[in-house]
Length: 357
Image 1 (tube, rainbow, N blue to C red):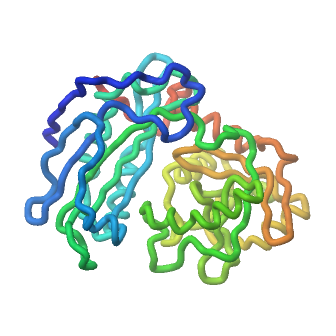
Image 2: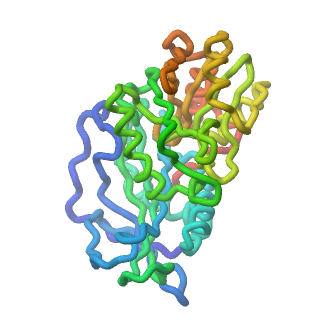
Image 3: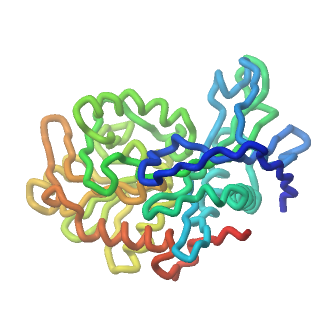
């Protein structure tokens, strides 16, 4: 167990007055968690301090070679006033998986969860009270060695910051339009597609900008070898309900193993759906749409939870889904997940963790 030192701010920030206009990731709480790593000593000096800028050497490894990783999870305020997390152990384990690929020292799962709980407890007054709003939590690790040689750093900083946030997409739960990218790729076998590292996201910005210029909310990525099979959307995993069955790409190294994705699969199997994790060609999806068999499409992720899709554009072909409305399974999943997260439905899965005062 970590011995976390706490230094509380002497100049608290004003909290948002209108929680319906929070946006996503634009406002930050009073404190942050920090812990350092030194080769030979391990992780040390866990502490919660007032939120403040870092002072770093321009030659830090992270600036030049992107040796870093991050996570994303949320804290929710229930109607009873409790604060709870959703499956933080899954984020902690995924952080370890990313660390292994990025040559970053692993943070023990229990230490990761303890650090998140401790920071959320200190800043618990920042957890929004408004329905649909939550406290977004961003843990990240950066390499802090100073020098321009390409090698794994011997020093790291683990930091957690928090941001009261509303809907990830401006549309909220309204169905979005998705552009299928067939020029650029997000990942390929043997690379870092399964990790949550900044480089994956930086490489996706170009295609995202191009899609946005055409009025699309996100990019759907195809596999990096044949550019034939669907993988994931820019900030989400994606599911297709075709002729009563649910399809999603398998997590085999090129797809991020999302916590919400995992939860959706478990729920759908409980409800009797066949869930197929494997290769699904974009051409087959578009054909299913023309045959009237593409019933629902939705993205899943911590930030957006569930995001219904009303349109897919691939080359010159456009598929319209669910008559532009939210499908019944999509709605049920959203209601169930948010119900569990905000404590409106019983947590029969043991997914939530209450943050103790």
